[in-house]
Length: 382
Image 1 (tube, helix red, strand yellow):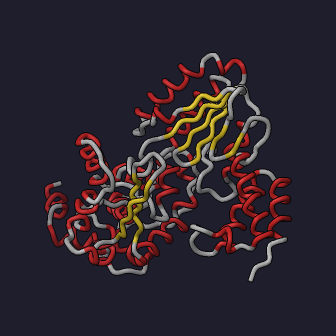
Image 2 (cartoon, rainbow, N blue to C red):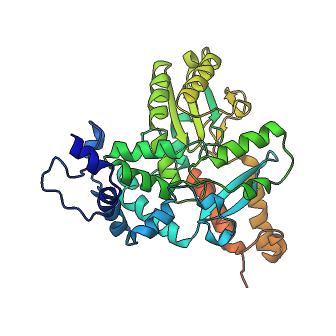
Image 3 (cartoon, rainbow, N blue to C red):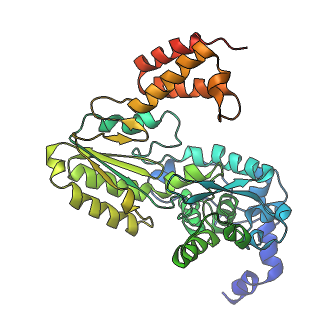
């Protein structure tokens, strides 16, 4: 035991293990994948047991892996933006606040895409999650909630930034990766925002809001803009989805989630308990490390416009009438007066912009999409 402790704390031995230069004779001493019992044992993931193996798998050197994983959180302390791994941009929201977009630079983005393709896409999220999944869309998200007596919509506050590096490490440990590998995989997928970026926040905010925002973004978290963040967010919300799906089933309701948007719907029995149900959802979200933006909670009965993800749900799934009429008028004027007369403040390719809006309407309601497509075919493009 004393000899084992001597080797365990010897710097040269620890460095040799880290770099993968040691060959263990006995299986008991070799690092190996140890997934949690149950479903994780069935996930077919690449076996990466040492940081050196992870570096080879990513086709980078061990030093580059340490730099990109930023285990020591040096990236946020760099004075020059050129040495950082992310581009930062504040995006205005409808309510007057701003959302921070953290876009990884090219090399880190390529590493993240490999982690997404080879690891994260092989781990199934909960069935209630419809965002950022192949074969799922906003149509599948709202389908269970069409023509119901009541639709309840709730929104999670700061969905991506609230998922910390510690939670991401726990996900990779559950998948079976040893702690040194899990730590570096999580480091590739999370980030800490430099203080200079936070001080450039547009608009006014109270001291409490400034403190809360700084505490949120200075903690290593999922960056909104990284290719791995949506998949990791779905996996991090798995326990939340399990509990809310069970709560909804107990109340005789249906539950789906698209990123931070949660929707519940039910019939007459659910109407009587809807308000109490919302309180229970808020409590469960807090227990799972999330927070419901209570000001955005909506209880929509048949007498009002029931909508979610920009789709009206009262009788059948439809795009909002006002948006449909506006797009129809734009297409009509384009055919009559020419597309230049309607482009106005739309940047970029106006033709592609119109085709995208028509495709969205057709996805929700094919009949209305066909009408819009017929109007589009009448436009003469120069």
